[in-house]
Image 1: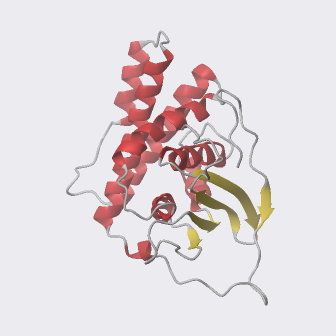
Image 2: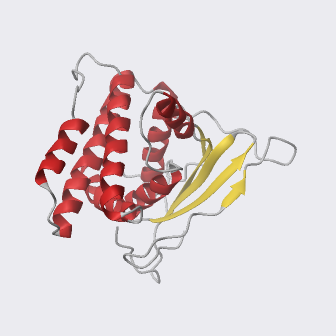
Length: 251
Protein backbone atom coordinates (compact mmCIF):
# COMPACT_ATOMS: atom_id res chain seq x y z
CA UNK A 1 0.00 0.00 0.00
CA UNK A 2 1.54 3.30 -1.04
CA UNK A 3 1.71 6.01 1.62
CA UNK A 4 -0.10 9.27 0.74
CA UNK A 5 1.41 12.69 1.46
CA UNK A 6 0.84 14.04 4.94
CA UNK A 7 -2.74 15.24 5.30
CA UNK A 8 -3.99 13.55 2.13
CA UNK A 9 -6.99 11.24 2.28
CA UNK A 10 -5.84 7.77 1.12
CA UNK A 11 -8.03 5.83 -1.30
CA UNK A 12 -9.81 2.79 0.04
CA UNK A 13 -7.74 -0.35 -0.54
CA UNK A 14 -8.86 -2.46 -3.47
CA UNK A 15 -10.86 -5.57 -2.68
CA UNK A 16 -9.82 -8.93 -4.09
CA UNK A 17 -11.65 -12.25 -3.94
CA UNK A 18 -10.78 -14.87 -1.36
CA UNK A 19 -9.91 -18.20 -2.96
CA UNK A 20 -11.83 -21.28 -2.00
CA UNK A 21 -10.05 -24.50 -1.10
CA UNK A 22 -9.17 -26.68 -4.04
CA UNK A 23 -6.43 -28.36 -6.08
CA UNK A 24 -3.28 -26.35 -6.61
CA UNK A 25 -3.72 -24.22 -3.50
CA UNK A 26 -1.13 -24.33 -0.70
CA UNK A 27 -1.72 -26.92 2.02
CA UNK A 28 -3.49 -25.78 5.16
CA UNK A 29 -1.11 -24.03 7.53
CA UNK A 30 -0.80 -25.09 11.17
CA UNK A 31 -3.14 -23.33 13.63
CA UNK A 32 -2.01 -20.10 15.21
CA UNK A 33 -0.27 -20.30 18.59
CA UNK A 34 -2.65 -17.63 19.83
CA UNK A 35 -5.66 -19.95 19.80
CA UNK A 36 -4.61 -20.87 23.34
CA UNK A 37 -4.27 -17.30 24.68
CA UNK A 38 -5.50 -17.24 28.25
CA UNK A 39 -8.38 -15.03 29.38
CA UNK A 40 -5.90 -12.89 31.33
CA UNK A 41 -3.76 -12.37 28.21
CA UNK A 42 -6.80 -11.41 26.17
CA UNK A 43 -7.98 -8.97 28.84
CA UNK A 44 -4.51 -7.38 28.97
CA UNK A 45 -4.48 -6.85 25.20
CA UNK A 46 -7.92 -5.24 25.24
CA UNK A 47 -6.68 -2.85 27.96
CA UNK A 48 -3.51 -2.05 26.00
CA UNK A 49 -5.52 -1.32 22.89
CA UNK A 50 -7.81 1.01 24.84
CA UNK A 51 -4.77 2.78 26.29
CA UNK A 52 -3.22 3.23 22.85
CA UNK A 53 -6.45 4.72 21.48
CA UNK A 54 -7.23 7.09 24.35
CA UNK A 55 -3.63 8.23 24.88
CA UNK A 56 -3.30 8.66 21.13
CA UNK A 57 -6.42 10.81 21.03
CA UNK A 58 -5.13 13.00 23.86
CA UNK A 59 -1.81 13.37 22.01
CA UNK A 60 -3.62 14.18 18.76
CA UNK A 61 -5.82 16.89 20.28
CA UNK A 62 -2.86 18.53 22.01
CA UNK A 63 -0.85 18.50 18.76
CA UNK A 64 -3.65 20.28 16.86
CA UNK A 65 -3.60 23.25 19.19
CA UNK A 66 -7.35 23.65 18.71
CA UNK A 67 -9.63 25.24 21.23
CA UNK A 68 -11.23 21.98 22.36
CA UNK A 69 -14.26 22.52 24.55
CA UNK A 70 -12.96 20.98 27.76
CA UNK A 71 -16.39 20.11 29.11
CA UNK A 72 -17.02 17.97 26.00
CA UNK A 73 -13.57 16.39 26.29
CA UNK A 74 -14.02 15.52 29.96
CA UNK A 75 -17.46 14.10 29.21
CA UNK A 76 -15.96 11.89 26.50
CA UNK A 77 -13.26 10.59 28.84
CA UNK A 78 -15.87 9.91 31.50
CA UNK A 79 -17.98 7.92 29.02
CA UNK A 80 -14.96 5.98 27.71
CA UNK A 81 -13.94 4.89 31.21
CA UNK A 82 -17.42 4.48 32.69
CA UNK A 83 -18.20 1.25 34.53
CA UNK A 84 -14.70 -0.20 34.22
CA UNK A 85 -14.63 -3.84 35.32
CA UNK A 86 -12.37 -4.94 38.13
CA UNK A 87 -9.04 -5.95 36.62
CA UNK A 88 -8.70 -9.11 38.68
CA UNK A 89 -12.25 -10.39 38.39
CA UNK A 90 -13.60 -9.45 34.94
CA UNK A 91 -13.03 -11.63 31.90
CA UNK A 92 -11.97 -10.69 28.40
CA UNK A 93 -15.57 -10.21 27.12
CA UNK A 94 -16.06 -7.38 29.63
CA UNK A 95 -12.88 -5.62 28.51
CA UNK A 96 -13.86 -6.17 24.88
CA UNK A 97 -17.14 -4.38 25.59
CA UNK A 98 -15.29 -1.46 27.21
CA UNK A 99 -12.84 -1.20 24.30
CA UNK A 100 -15.51 -1.30 21.62
CA UNK A 101 -17.65 1.28 23.40
CA UNK A 102 -14.63 3.56 23.84
CA UNK A 103 -13.56 3.15 20.21
CA UNK A 104 -17.07 4.00 18.99
CA UNK A 105 -17.26 7.07 21.24
CA UNK A 106 -13.84 8.38 20.17
CA UNK A 107 -14.61 7.86 16.48
CA UNK A 108 -17.86 9.77 16.83
CA UNK A 109 -16.15 12.57 18.80
CA UNK A 110 -13.53 13.07 16.06
CA UNK A 111 -15.71 12.64 13.00
CA UNK A 112 -18.41 14.98 14.31
CA UNK A 113 -15.81 17.74 14.83
CA UNK A 114 -13.28 17.27 12.05
CA UNK A 115 -14.76 14.86 9.51
CA UNK A 116 -13.90 11.29 8.60
CA UNK A 117 -10.47 12.07 7.01
CA UNK A 118 -9.12 13.00 10.46
CA UNK A 119 -9.16 9.31 11.44
CA UNK A 120 -5.89 8.81 9.55
CA UNK A 121 -4.23 11.46 11.72
CA UNK A 122 -5.61 9.85 14.86
CA UNK A 123 -4.24 6.50 13.72
CA UNK A 124 -0.77 8.00 13.32
CA UNK A 125 -0.98 9.54 16.78
CA UNK A 126 -2.06 6.22 18.29
CA UNK A 127 0.87 4.55 16.56
CA UNK A 128 3.29 6.79 18.43
CA UNK A 129 1.86 5.40 21.67
CA UNK A 130 1.96 1.88 20.19
CA UNK A 131 5.64 2.34 19.39
CA UNK A 132 6.37 2.79 23.10
CA UNK A 133 3.99 0.33 24.76
CA UNK A 134 4.15 -2.65 22.38
CA UNK A 135 7.28 -4.70 23.16
CA UNK A 136 9.77 -5.68 20.47
CA UNK A 137 10.36 -9.44 20.49
CA UNK A 138 13.30 -9.54 18.06
CA UNK A 139 11.38 -11.19 15.21
CA UNK A 140 11.79 -8.25 12.84
CA UNK A 141 8.91 -7.83 10.37
CA UNK A 142 7.15 -10.78 12.00
CA UNK A 143 6.56 -8.78 15.19
CA UNK A 144 3.76 -6.55 13.78
CA UNK A 145 2.17 -9.59 12.11
CA UNK A 146 2.10 -11.42 15.45
CA UNK A 147 0.50 -8.40 17.12
CA UNK A 148 -2.11 -8.33 14.35
CA UNK A 149 -2.75 -12.06 14.82
CA UNK A 150 -3.32 -11.53 18.53
CA UNK A 151 -5.83 -8.77 17.76
CA UNK A 152 -7.59 -10.98 15.22
CA UNK A 153 -7.76 -13.72 17.83
CA UNK A 154 -9.52 -11.38 20.25
CA UNK A 155 -12.50 -11.22 17.90
CA UNK A 156 -12.38 -14.88 16.88
CA UNK A 157 -11.29 -14.07 13.31
CA UNK A 158 -9.89 -16.80 11.06
CA UNK A 159 -6.32 -16.10 9.93
CA UNK A 160 -3.20 -17.76 8.59
CA UNK A 161 0.47 -16.85 8.81
CA UNK A 162 2.76 -17.23 5.85
CA UNK A 163 5.88 -19.19 6.70
CA UNK A 164 7.41 -17.55 9.76
CA UNK A 165 10.67 -16.33 8.26
CA UNK A 166 11.95 -15.31 11.69
CA UNK A 167 12.15 -18.88 13.01
CA UNK A 168 15.80 -19.74 13.63
CA UNK A 169 17.07 -17.29 11.04
CA UNK A 170 17.25 -14.01 12.87
CA UNK A 171 14.85 -11.10 12.43
CA UNK A 172 12.54 -11.42 9.41
CA UNK A 173 12.87 -8.96 6.53
CA UNK A 174 9.31 -9.73 5.39
CA UNK A 175 6.25 -11.29 7.01
CA UNK A 176 2.61 -11.71 6.00
CA UNK A 177 -0.73 -12.63 7.52
CA UNK A 178 -4.05 -13.34 5.81
CA UNK A 179 -7.30 -12.84 7.69
CA UNK A 180 -9.70 -15.14 5.86
CA UNK A 181 -12.74 -14.13 7.92
CA UNK A 182 -12.78 -10.86 9.84
CA UNK A 183 -15.02 -11.27 12.86
CA UNK A 184 -14.89 -7.54 13.60
CA UNK A 185 -17.70 -7.26 11.09
CA UNK A 186 -19.71 -9.84 13.05
CA UNK A 187 -19.07 -8.10 16.36
CA UNK A 188 -20.03 -4.68 14.95
CA UNK A 189 -23.35 -6.03 13.74
CA UNK A 190 -24.05 -7.58 17.14
CA UNK A 191 -23.21 -4.23 18.76
CA UNK A 192 -25.40 -2.34 16.30
CA UNK A 193 -28.34 -4.61 17.10
CA UNK A 194 -27.77 -4.01 20.82
CA UNK A 195 -28.01 -0.23 20.35
CA UNK A 196 -24.38 0.91 19.92
CA UNK A 197 -24.16 3.87 17.51
CA UNK A 198 -21.56 3.18 14.83
CA UNK A 199 -19.98 6.10 13.01
CA UNK A 200 -18.29 4.28 10.13
CA UNK A 201 -20.00 2.16 7.49
CA UNK A 202 -17.03 -0.21 7.39
CA UNK A 203 -14.47 -1.07 10.09
CA UNK A 204 -11.81 -1.18 7.33
CA UNK A 205 -11.91 2.63 7.07
CA UNK A 206 -10.11 3.01 10.38
CA UNK A 207 -8.54 -0.44 10.77
CA UNK A 208 -6.39 -0.23 7.63
CA UNK A 209 -5.06 3.18 8.75
CA UNK A 210 -4.41 2.00 12.30
CA UNK A 211 -2.58 -1.22 11.44
CA UNK A 212 -0.54 0.48 8.69
CA UNK A 213 0.49 3.23 11.10
CA UNK A 214 1.48 0.70 13.76
CA UNK A 215 3.64 -1.20 11.27
CA UNK A 216 5.37 2.00 10.15
CA UNK A 217 5.88 3.09 13.76
CA UNK A 218 7.87 -0.10 14.31
CA UNK A 219 10.10 0.70 11.31
CA UNK A 220 8.54 -1.47 8.60
CA UNK A 221 6.72 -0.86 5.34
CA UNK A 222 3.03 -1.97 5.33
CA UNK A 223 0.96 -3.35 2.48
CA UNK A 224 -2.70 -4.38 2.66
CA UNK A 225 -5.24 -5.89 0.29
CA UNK A 226 -8.90 -6.26 1.25
CA UNK A 227 -10.55 -9.57 0.42
CA UNK A 228 -14.09 -10.87 0.17
CA UNK A 229 -15.60 -14.17 -0.80
CA UNK A 230 -17.41 -17.25 0.50
CA UNK A 231 -15.79 -16.90 3.92
CA UNK A 232 -16.82 -13.25 4.28
CA UNK A 233 -14.67 -10.13 4.65
CA UNK A 234 -10.93 -10.52 5.06
CA UNK A 235 -7.59 -8.90 4.29
CA UNK A 236 -3.97 -9.74 3.57
CA UNK A 237 -1.25 -7.83 5.40
CA UNK A 238 2.49 -7.66 4.76
CA UNK A 239 5.30 -5.96 6.65
CA UNK A 240 8.69 -5.48 5.02
CA UNK A 241 11.96 -3.93 6.08
CA UNK A 242 12.53 -0.78 3.98
CA UNK A 243 15.28 -1.12 1.39
CA UNK A 244 18.22 1.25 1.29
CA UNK A 245 16.56 3.13 -1.56
CA UNK A 246 13.28 3.60 0.30
CA UNK A 247 12.95 6.59 2.61
CA UNK A 248 11.79 5.50 6.06
CA UNK A 249 8.10 6.29 6.33
CA UNK A 250 7.01 8.39 9.27
CA UNK A 251 3.98 7.19 11.21
